[in-house]
Amino acid sequence: MRRELSGDARIATPDPSADAAAEASRLPSASAGKGHSELKRCLCSYAATMMVIIAGLYFYTALSPYYIALYHLSWTPMLGSHIAPITIDLTLALRTFAGIYALALLPYYALRPGRLSNAHTMFRFIFRRIAAWSAATPAERHGHLADADKQAMLCLLLKFIFIPFCIHGLVAYLAYTNDQIAGLRELLAGASGIDLFSFYNSHLHYLILNMIFLVDFFPFVVGYLVQARILDNEVVSVDASPGGWLACLVCYPPFNAAMAALLPWQVVDLAPAYPTFSIVTHLALNAVLLTCFGFYAYASVSLGFKCSNLMHRGIVRRGLYRAVRHPAYLFKNLAWWTGAIPLLVNLAQTSLKEFFWTGFCLAGWSCIYGLRALSEERHLSRHADYRAYMQQVPFRFIPGVA
Image (cartoon, rainbow, N blue to C red):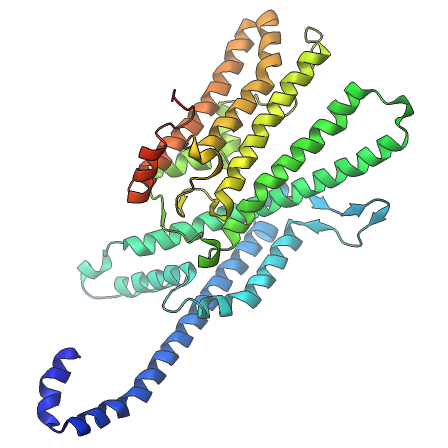
């Protein structure tokens, strides 16, 4: 276009005023074409994304027996003696968010000129591959997947996997916390004969723990549902390595069920009370366990709405991330090992075989999280900002040690 205006077009219109008039006459049609292109982009991105949302909704609520059985929890909110007239389950939650998306996506895409949705990118790639396979030349049938297309589809797949998991987790811990508060209220109503030790084990410990996990899940739900400049959580890149995906997915359903068959889950959320442990020791161990889980949730809060798996969404240097690069993995594993101490002590006295097997299983899960940390760094270190962060924070897990 630039060559035409500086060459042939100028020869055809030597009069500058005529050239300007001709250029002006072309502007409305160019503007109209651009407007039409933007409208088409918005509508195509919207339609493609809604198709994926509807497909995901159908898969998780009507098609997959595994997920229907796994995500079966429902919650009827209670406030004092008042019971809400609605029961919230995953189906209702997903349908609600699908409705919100249906209303919000068009203006969202309109405010992002020139950007295609991940779903639009995926469908465009599929249609191009279909067209290529119908072409006459074999070379066109074996075109490589462009990196941008791969990144868009991997991002879409991550959301497809983790959005239902995170929403269900949020509903679950809202339900658990609500039930614990209701049970606590009933228990305190007849507090005259309350056993404080039993009260802690049956109510207080789990109330604190559920509130911690509720705080942990919230930023993940928002992070997966919404990516926007205003939240500073735009996806920069997605890890495409099979090793990175394997290390991550074995920690989540349905893949963790297969992993737990290999390394039986030996983790407890309440350190067990054995006769050989005093009440003080029992309470101290569980206080450490809750503190570790509290720091684990604080790491998620520090990430803010950048929370996600296998994605690079910008560097976080606040909170625990000023001291170590993987505080969430560190404190989650410390909590597991703390909760297992009474069990390990008991097994050391009763069955050395079970003692070593339990320790081996715990160590195996810790190694998985170590592999997750290494695979994440391999992905993130492709970016200069993360390499600078690694120099600023040289330790992965323990300051001055590792």
